[in-house]
Image (cartoon, rainbow, N blue to C red; front, side, top):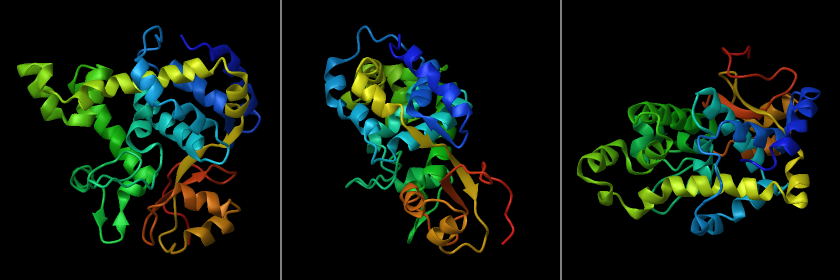
Length: 275
């Protein structure tokens, strides 16, 4: 079980007095409650070592990762999916929305261009929805939801299908798991190891203090159709423009949604605002 669950529980009360922010402790509590497999007695030592940087990455106050992780976790949990799936971007991109791989995948969830287009994202010219946390997370959650239903709500099978494709998983069921690559077979082990790293670090007072910091609650915001300058829009809203820019590396004139810190007048994606 998650050793720090009780330590983090106080964060919920704290966040209630400041609804536009929450502590990392509240995020971790929400993460723990949604785990499909909270048993950390036998995590993979190999992958726990390999991903040891993840917990420190979340504790780094100069990074946006903790706030973005909270947003992705919210989307995963609201879809009724296990918290483990919110860890996929750690494996795929180190939770960097602007990540690009030499083989072509890009963004938080590392979609290829072809896969992104099949899931309703635009990838052409200077437009690349894979770099949008909002668009790519919506697509990833829809896809994971479909896979989760397809594979009997088995989170491990679902994770492997996300990595290899549903066709490969179906074929492996008919012909044996040995036909799957080692990367695919180890995928759920990686996610479980990262979850157990959070469990392990919950007993570390320094990490607890760092993770308990307040971070903005992030939500999609539908921008006016005429918006051409995201920085100018953010300044007009009284938001930290540099932070908004960092959250939206794929934003371009004509993009309708942006990920922003929730404020007094900011909420989830709504109908067009007045220009």
